[in-house]
Length: 205
Image (cartoon, rainbow, N blue to C red; front, side, top):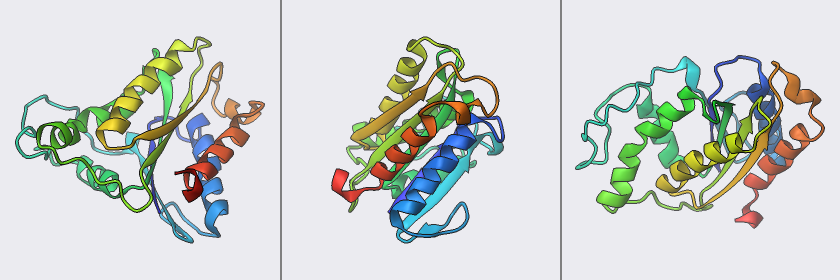
């Protein structure tokens, strides 16, 4: 099973990193030992993209993908697009900035307009694959209003449906701002561990 992970946080060693470390541990524990960010965890291949370190231009709304389903911009989205095509499970993790996903995360989602064209204009949706396609959305925000989670979730869900992911779960943690503070949260690490383990469970399809 191929698990593709998008880290949308610009802060190295921050709250999103801590949650993703717990998610990777759960995937590893679910299927056996493995090592490294691209390890094959006894059948679960974990591939992580740290978006802040990548060359990803914003969508230019040029219409170049409307007839082909292919983006005309050739940057690091080429490898991301292929990973999305091959994925069985997707984990999207982002801090909440101004009640929305980070700019790094949103740039990737906007560039997936090519998948939208492929699915809805060209009638070529991504195939379900042998395990179906599921996603987990992880959000951390300093604010305490649920609207930040709701707005981010709405955008992410539009992305998931565009890339033919019919099932998704959201875990959002509010009132967490300081770097590394998520590890002091009463339930966050345990919640993410359980959700990630369930994500790769075939029984939960």
